[in-house]
Amino acid sequence: MLEAEGYRVHSGTKADGLELVGRFWFTWRVPAMADCEVGPTCSGPWDAWASALDHRLSNSRIEVHQVSVASSPLEPFHPAVVPEEVLDVRSFAARYGLSEEVASAQISRLFAQAIYMNDRYQVNVEVVDAPFGEETGDVLRLSIKRRDKAPVHDWRELQQIKAMSQA
Image 1 (cartoon, one colour):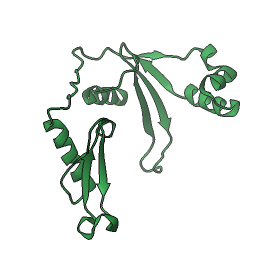
Image 2 (cartoon, rainbow, N blue to C red):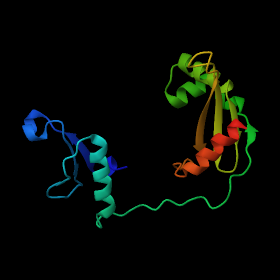
Image 3 (cartoon, rainbow, N blue to C red):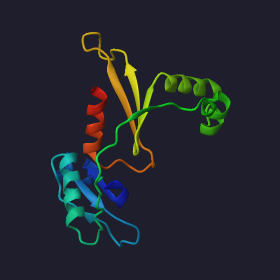
């Protein structure tokens, strides 16, 4: 989000001067600004990003976006299926600009997943067979999407969906 609003973090090199080698700082510039603002030098990139975030939050010229939290609890999930006519290899390949071979592989992968929906989310569940070895066992890979295609802002809902998948 900070990058989209014109923030960048830089790493000092010899070309910047010996005092900046191994140091990090942020700059902020938006279109129509005569010059960019420069943050303090920091010991690491995460410190520079934190400084940029502090600048963003304290800069009154920037509108802070408010994230609304869903007010209602999650509805129960129910099993869903993808209609077979949607998964025709030729139309799938044409729709997404894929070769028929790649489209066929993607469709096979979709058929191997369990799909669940509620009023807000679609969750695709895929079992990955022991990706870290037999001693750790299988892993569930969740693909969670909002049905209205809006970004997911509430991590509590994601945690709740994850907990529901383990039950």
